[in-house]
Image (tube, rainbow, N blue to C red; front, side, top):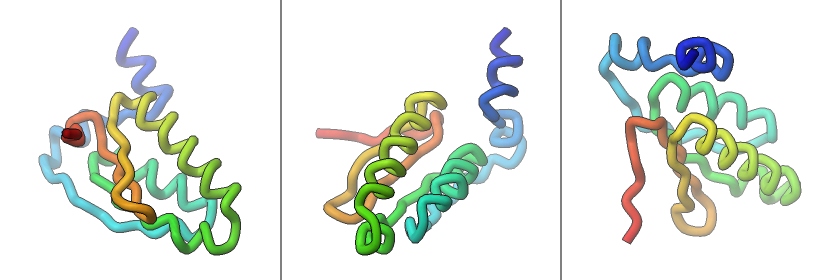
Amino acid sequence: MRGVIDKIIGRKEDVLEASGETYIKAIPLKAYEDVDVIKSEVRAGNIVITNVSPLAKRNIEDVKRAINELNDYAILISGDIARLGEERVILTPRTVKIWRS
């Protein structure tokens, strides 16, 4: 059953184990559609740091929507998400947890 659910939500742990490489990528949030790019990178096993300033300058409501969607996605994949200062957010796959003091 777990394998079926993983296929539905798009988990690719087999790919992660095969490649063995994780990258930290900086992807600016220039448009709401960039959320899909960020999610696909995390799905591939990468850590994404995104700067929300470019979109915040144009549409704060889209920023709120994007952050909520990324937060829901992190919960869905058992990943992690945290704010880095005022302008940046980090999103990690389930194999990486963010330390909080």
